[in-house]
Image 1 (tube, rainbow, N blue to C red):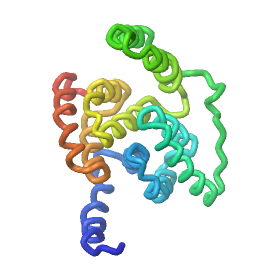
Image 2: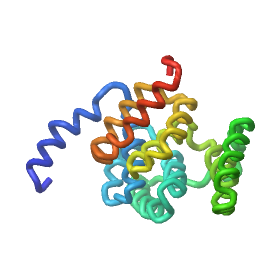
Image 3: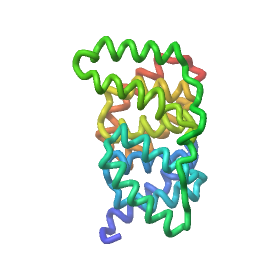
Length: 222
């Protein structure tokens, strides 16, 4: 590093963050990759893509993360990440295909999806029918049901991207969904610690009241 002060905090503080209990190295890698994609910081991706692969994230899972974030942080960010992944895969001689293209989708919670779709349609159907249509057909009846990334991990990616982008209005729904999908209270809180370093303290402090409200609204066992 060219700046000794940054090196001081990288080696003396950030290195310790990665060793904290409460969130696995694999999960920390997923959070960090999600942040870099969401913030279009592709230049920093190779280091963390390699760390993710070394920590047990499968190449097919990385492919799913990038595709997922195309919807949640924009296509341009995902394309930039795709180019960074191509370089890492070339170095590691990894070849991937869309194994999930024809795979059976995960089971849909019909009641919950019907409730979500009705709420969105009632509120926004007259504003943008196209957004409402693709939200149902492309996101919740396809993307979220792809088997290549566990629902819990897909939710962790989504929440991380929302916090990193300052989109706190969307966090309540997706954090509840993440915890329904198996993310624990401790893991969610520790994800905020990771996010503070990679998305910045202001974004995390903007999100913490929402996390607090979600935690308070749920049974203590979460």
